[in-house]
Length: 49
Image (cartoon, rainbow, N blue to C red; front, side):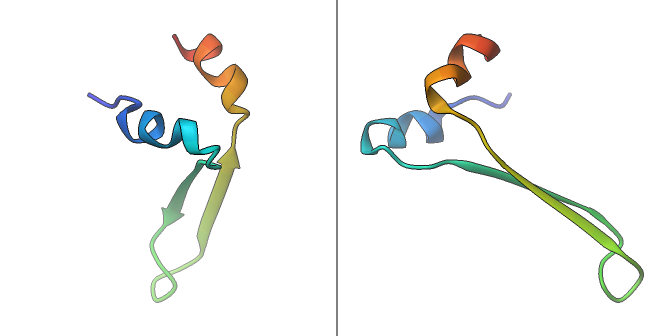
C-alpha cells in the first residue's frame, strides 16, 4: 500500500517533492503524454488524511 514514508523523510529539509507519470506506448510505437505536479506540502496532509 502506498504511503508517505519517502515524503516524510524529506519534509524537514524543505524539499520540493514532485509527482510524475507517463502514459502511451513509447516514442517507437506512438505518442507519449507525460505530466508532473508539485503540491503545497502545507496543505497536502489535510486533504489526503
